Length: 625
Image (tube, rainbow, N blue to C red; front, top):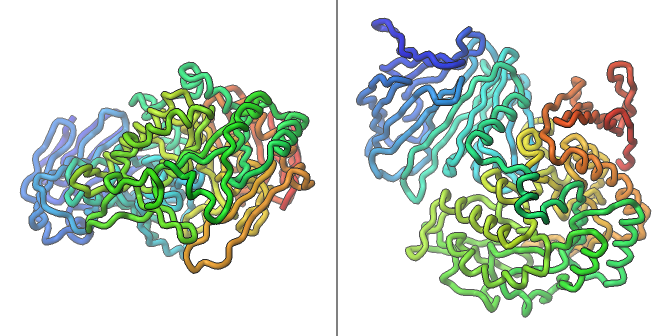
């Protein structure tokens, strides 16, 4: 419903939201009907300062039933801007549609940041890919000013297309589903605490397709309300598939419930050692778990795989692993290829805008070329028979690498087409009957994949340039849909980066409801780029008392996942100001309290020691540093 007075902003009223826009400038506000949760946005003059190639001219603005539509000219670029009530309650959509094919040299920033009126942002939540999510609380003196590719790689990309901002009186969930050419800029602001701005990147040179951001008002502030609201949207859109649904379709997925990721590195080990490990794991109490990799499937890598170091290739290990109740998996890595691989074909390669072939992985003098995802499946199907030996496949980089373009005239590919190709390939291989996962993880693939590695690495860093807290943001949306492990080469065991973060990693997994990632035996040569120093190795041995301690401390973590994996995560909260004590609850009634601090914590009259957790009243102490 539109209400207006002459000379006043146009106003539209919808369920849970009031939208106000000045037709002469397009500045306005989004607020709850009571006015208690109000956010404002600047006008179109901000576009010229943030990517326009000339003065901005507002050529027209018309009122629509649920909002307004304007036409803007920025030099040779002409766009329409629609600001309107969405079909979802309490939601407003900002849509930018290109009306010309003019090239875009720099990202076009629109809409402007939504800022709280007469309040400050007290929390920003981001689903950074190599975390389960982080919450940042702006502090005086913070000087944030950074921009990142939302569809980027492990360090900067997002696992889910949203962010949330909160004041003490309410929150705002901002989403950009199916928008692959977007960057986010986070800056400190003296008045509001922090701003988040959207920048639209070109797609193969132009804007090409409509760009859309939605903002949903949240009555309750905080990341929990935002995540649960986003989950409802995913379910309503038909994009959510539970683990129970996946198990019904592919029974092999049931093997991941309560299953640790037993990372064994990629160096060979003997069958005798394998049998010792399998017997020992069962003696400890394990009855399931992913174990591997026991083979390396990368095109026709056999002739060159052991040039400098031995790689494991033991498909015969699959049978005893399966007989012991565990799940054997192989590495499945087709995104890059070496020019001396027998499968190498220049027609497979991606092409950058300047005509060069983008570089993939680098290790010593191995310089991989990037394979174009548009043709990867066509060539990758030749490995189907070989892959059939393994119940599970770990895709190395399919969801951890940034979405990319290909400018080849034979197989051009936008970032959106790249996303669709990667998702289709994951879905196809899952259809072969495998349990599948990938390094990193993006929710555009969570309905077709089963596990990912969206958890902190090394010193449990946040990958955010200011102090921030780890939160189970992904778990609040997808706990009962996709399993999240730690990075395969940075498990609970002492890290090859030189530190021991076993205690905090175990407690983080308990907080997030993840199964453990731990090595019973491991051999690994870290990646060494040109000029980066001498080759070193990292080892985990079964007989080491520290290995045995970690395997025993990981068992109740696995059992927690067994108990909760098929149930949604309902809530999470930190119980102390320092952010060291947390409570997580699940739909089956399971309650988990974690004290990652050093001192005991009094929880409603019950003391919980430092470095410990309590599941449904039963406390467990964690060792390590």
